[in-house]
Length: 146
Image (tube, rainbow, N blue to C red):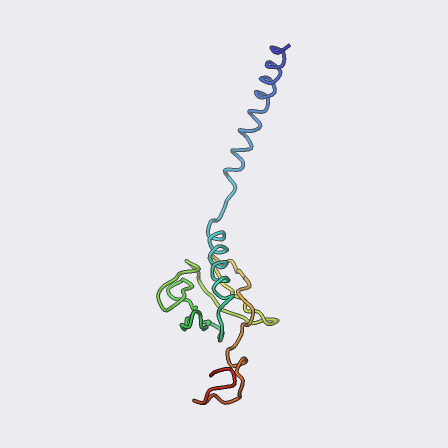
């Protein structure tokens, strides 16, 4: 009885082998772009930074914000989307990049190899001036300081 089960299993396996080989051959010919995956991972990391950034100022070609008490600028330099000061590259080999504000959110639009991409980057952000006790900042301490 065990011999019959082993032979049946072997016949089933051998009959599936040509189908598996054909499926591997067809799957290997599917074009796959790793650049899009890398873009998504990099933009995810940028979104994490933007979650705690504040005093966000955006224009068509750059995004300025304060993160960890330092001023940063996100802009295109030499076909790359770079965070400065320093050089942290988020998108590589892009032809064009610009920022757009819609419905209280900032979107990044970029083009690579004649394909347009649009990804949401962050919400409009918080501004430190909104949390002040007074309208005019002076050298006098406010009600929360001793």
